[in-house]
Length: 146
Ligand code: FES
Image 1 (cartoon, protein in one colour):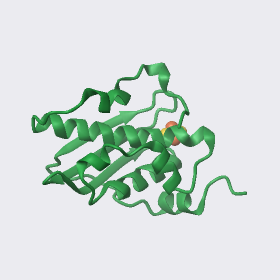
Image 2 (spheres, helix red, strand yellow):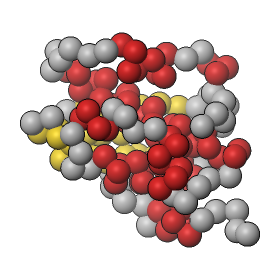
Image 3 (cartoon, protein in one colour):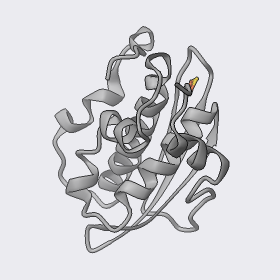
């Protein structure tokens, strides 16, 4: 069996939503100190709906495919739904990732959550700290847990 699904390869070769958004409503930048990969997510939000999402990822093929899929999954969705996006959902939508590459999808989950936190802060919107707890983990806590 191939290590990567066709969907992963497709999103790696033809990533959707690459780039930046001028005047974004939320920006998140996250990184994994172990592999050194970095992901930046830009969101345009109108009436609490994510009308556009873009990314810049300096990272492995799985990180690029995860950013591409994650931005596709949240576009057109209400903020409340985007808040619930998990790395598991990203990996599943990609047709799976090898176990040692699951952390790449975690980066996408964190990137989007970080951009959403930025959105709440920019507009002084109330938010539940708990929902952003994943952004406050210790440096050594970058595990492959799904
Ligand atoms: Fe680190 Fe893929 S190897 S994000």
